[in-house]
Length: 241
Image 1 (spheres, rainbow, N blue to C red):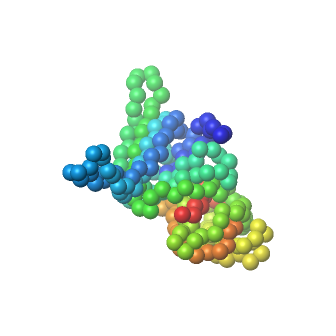
Image 2 (cartoon, rainbow, N blue to C red):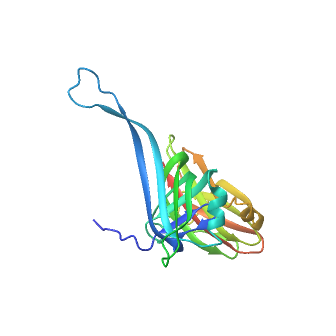
Image 3 (cartoon, rainbow, N blue to C red):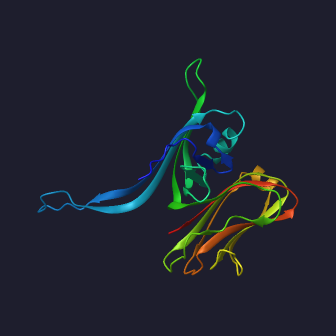
């Protein structure tokens, strides 16, 4: 078994990339255990109940971003959070739609580095165990890296989560699938249209969608279309479950 040192992971919250300011984080998935013990039982019996996701992070305070982003999102449902234990594209990532429940913008003693802490819980859909597809900038229309993630069963969905952290111009983002690595017969499965600087200023730069199966294609990628010249910086993940 190959262990992983948490030294080069990623954390995105809404439109904010918190990676450079985080010193610790914890992601917890739980199931509410319901007691079904009866009078004639000699030991406890339980059933697994509803699942939940909770997240906490602590780091170093910054007066501008991401402080403003987190402050605006506090208590607002449907903020996307993505966590990855490494920065390597194609490696594991975890993402979920959250409600930011607690934010301490400044903490610490005199002479110490000012810190902040953040806590969040799942809003809907639970935790998606996915793959980090993209993390970087696009300057012109082009395709992201295609990866063989697998087909989507009839009882499954493919989930897509994106964080746009910087943008100029206007961009359309599409999710595509195909049955071959060359994407010679690519099919568009979902579209995130008309992403602009105004989108970012309105604090709506985290994008989430899901597509229901069955889908027999097993190769997946994002396509980035530059409708008006500019640059887009983002992180994107996909997960099937």
